[in-house]
Length: 241
Image (cartoon, rainbow, N blue to C red; front, side, top):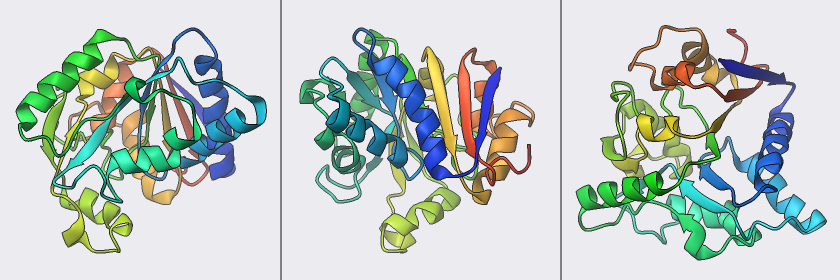
């Protein structure tokens, strides 16, 4: 069952997401599943602003990121380790030991997948933040990913690499061909999930997630089986609903 919130613009999408986030991070020792990309940046800015303005402490927060590119070092300007520190962690007081991001530069990727999945299974994620790809992927679980998948290495589709080329000077050849990602079963263990989507380019994927048949060809459609998913959209992303 989806709770669908449709707003006028990107900033209101971020505000609705922050409202949910704030209710989670102020209770106990929250565990967050975090995403990269343009969709959650507004949310992350509001988290930092809340910290600066209201003094909200994130010291007890534990985080797990969805994914990371394979084939670029952690200090690369487009690694997700760099993205998360520049767009969120450097502005909060989460201890570095509480931050978990899979390594895309590990020597043994099979072992890295196994180790990261073991870490994920040590805790239950209280709130998982997701974007959605134009082809319906969540994390880097591309179309065709089995619904029972756990953390694994995936080959990125041409569409995903093309969509992400804007972060690599518009050059698809610079976009890594592979990534490590939480699996769909890993994501589904979260207690609560929020999906953020804006823009007309996401409208078909949003429709497939919510109203399309449940199929591995639209990985996000697995969320139809989750009991607590809030989908926050602007009008363009919601245009097919």
